[in-house]
Structures are given as structure tokens and as C-alpha cells.
Amino acid sequence: MSRQIVLEEPHLRLCLAESEQDRLAVQRLRYEVFVAELGGDGDLVDHANRFERDAFDPHVDHLVLIDTRRHAAALDHVVAVYRLLPGQRAAAIGGFYCDAEYDLAPLIRSGRRLLELGRSCVHRDYRGGTAMFHLWNGLAEYVLARDIEVLFGVASFHGTDIDRLRLPLAYLHHHHLAPPELRVRVREEYFQPMDLLPRDAVDPARARPQLPSLIRGYLRLGGFVGEGAFVDRPFNTTDVCLVMDTALMSQRHRSYYTRRKGPAG
Image (cartoon, rainbow, N blue to C red; front, side, top):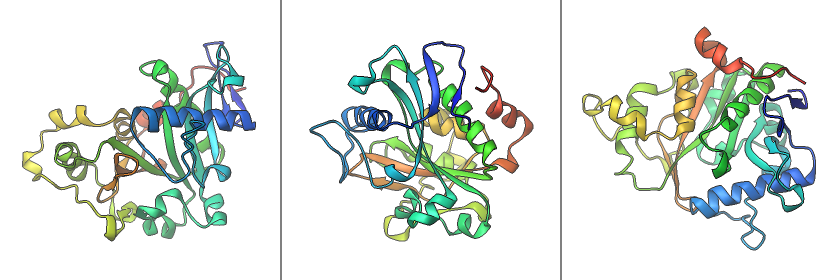
């Protein structure tokens, strides 16, 4: 993508993080959302300074939404973020983040240009507004500029109580399972089946509202899920792997994905 997209709200700026201050603000926002709000943890989480970080952070692009009214010196100016890892870069560092949870062989074998998405979050004060819309626009430009063919990444349900999640997980399995050529699968040692209810016992009208908004967004764009769920107890989430083939997106989905609220800058 270009370094910045001009937005209608003059106080908001969408760009790739470039400065150390921006990257620290990303890790501070992730701490507030994933650790303070959702109870997650990890080996590299810095509780004393309130940073959520991992070993992939130095190698990725961070697509950030910045509110210029907030204080950069206090590291609270980043209000939404998407973490992006292109396939060529992943190959250079030994793999994707998802490799630890999923067998990505179908995607790797495809030989197509891949982009892993992750660590998406929005500050609590900006949810329900335009923040996620802006991130989608920025992601669209990033993908189009690099001719990305397949997007994928982990999306999470809060909590690890599988019985509570059996309806939405079964709905995803029966109605949105990826085609075989793109069907990644949770590694056997972690495999949690998602077909926890028979297909005829799954009411989509009841199941869809139980999906996190990020998962619903991917499905609206024509996305699929891999096979099986991963229960991440340290991070207090239950993960599914979302996969989106840009060539299979309908024109309606594509126009939604690529529309702009402002001209590229």
C-alpha cells in the first residue's frame, strides 16, 4: 500500500507503522485488548510495561490506524492494528505464526502468493465505528499492491469452554469449511473437532450471532475455515483458521473489499 491513505476524518491516519514509537504503541494496544481485557498471556508478554509482543513482531508489517489527537509520547495513539506477514518474508524467517497450530501444507503446495493476517484489534473506544472499515480498506490496498492471492490467519473466540462454543463451531464446520485444496488442519496433537453437533441440529440463525465480528466479516467476503479448532489456554482463546481466496470472491464481495472512503495518498 502507499504509505498513507487519506481518510474523511481528519484526525485519523492509516499507514504502515514505521517508527519504534508506533511499534511500541501497537504492542501497548495489544496488551490492553488481549491481556488486560481478555486475560491472555504469553512468553514475551511484558506485564510490567504493558506490552504484548512475540518473536514475529520484528519481521511483519503493522497496518495501523492512528488518532492524531491522542498522545504518541504516551504510546496511546494507535487505536487499531492488523499484523501482516507476506509469504516470501515468512519463508525467509522459517515459517508463519500459524505453523505452530496448523498444518499449512495445502497453502504452501499451492505455490500462490500468501499473506498471513493476525493480531487484529481495535481500542475499546473505537469499536462499532469506522475503525475496522478503515483497516479493511488499508488491507485491500496492501493486498492489491502485492498481488496477494490467498489470505489466511487465526481468528479467535474468547474463552476455552468448548461446550459453550459447540453451536458456532459446528456451524462453521458444516457451512464454511474450506475446499480441500485450501483446507488447512489443526496439528494432530492439538486437534479439537468442530463438528460437535450434527448438521441438521445447527440453526444458522442462532449460530451466526455467536460468531466474533471479525469472523463474520471474513465470511461475508467469501472466506472459509480450516478443519478443527485450536484451544489456546495461555491466551484464553479458541482459534479457527480463516482462509480467503481472492480469486473466488464474488463481484459483490470484491467491491466491498476494495471500496474507498477517501483517495489514496
